[in-house]
Length: 143
Image 1 (spheres, helix red, strand yellow):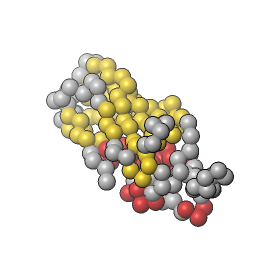
Image 2 (cartoon, helix red, strand yellow):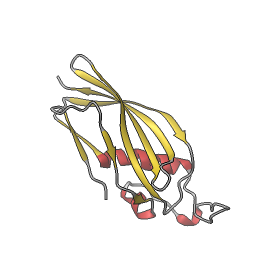
Image 3 (tube, rainbow, N blue to C red):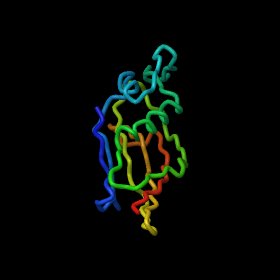
Image 4 (cartoon, one colour):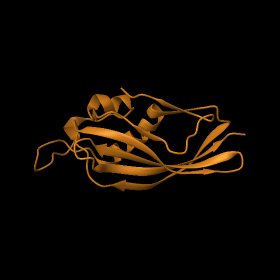
């Protein structure tokens, strides 16, 4: 379901945007990301009757998608420095159509490395509203 983007040390990586096609946030899609959800335990939205995913589940899905969407090649090392700026702007519903967006916010060349900040978002496909997001900070070593 997810297509992996290979980021290579030989390419110009200064303005990357990785975005999935719209997909349904179903129990099967969450299971592919390694997250199990029991729909019988989810609360219902009082207006629509749709099942609401808890914020932690949304964020887990967004973070788990990283390993399915991004792979590194031709780097000496890639260090995860931190995950920060967690934000929940709304609730995702089970069986809602969403898009995962990984957008490079900052790219700073250093001596033998690059400091990279990604804005990672779970976005409602219909309205383009961000449901939850976080920032991933990395250091890519090339030498």
